[in-house]
Length: 194
Image 1 (cartoon, rainbow, N blue to C red):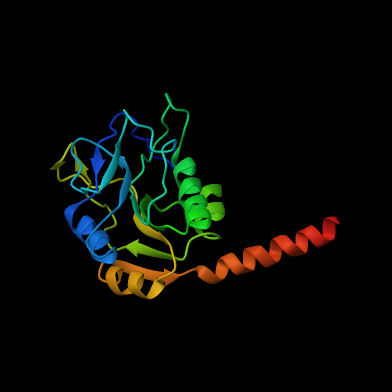
Image 2: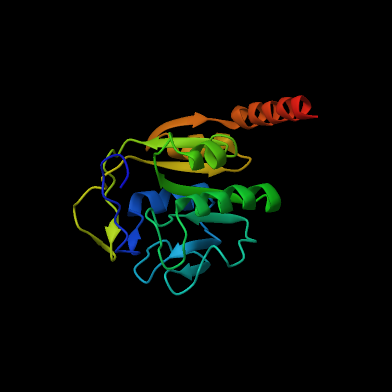
């Protein structure tokens, strides 16, 4: 349970709506190199797709330039993972490989994973105007909205392009300065310990 909502862990095949797939492709210049959270019904059509639940995208290589992630939002009991693991991989991959990464995730700004991997690691956030985003379920628009608001989060070096593409879909915020503030705070804490 989260904030009075039931977490749906039964379906791994909740797909990105077409307009957001088009926006992601537009941002990436037409090609998505990797979708580590794909499924048999996905319309993303990345060059490389790791298909859940048969391939564990968290364990596979993310050594690609342009990555789009629509991770499972609930807990994967079999793998023992949550969305926190996916966000950690996004932040780590951008930091170590300089990959450009977009992730469609639920807004949970009060959680430790948002504080650790989004606010202090990402470059920008688009808080989507669709307050109840209608995901494709098994490839079909069922008409039901998600029980939470969602955001497109960006780890990368081209905030201006992120803003220009995603301003049509929501409120876009540059949060790159938060990373510098977190680094400065870590250094201050380290001096206090030493």
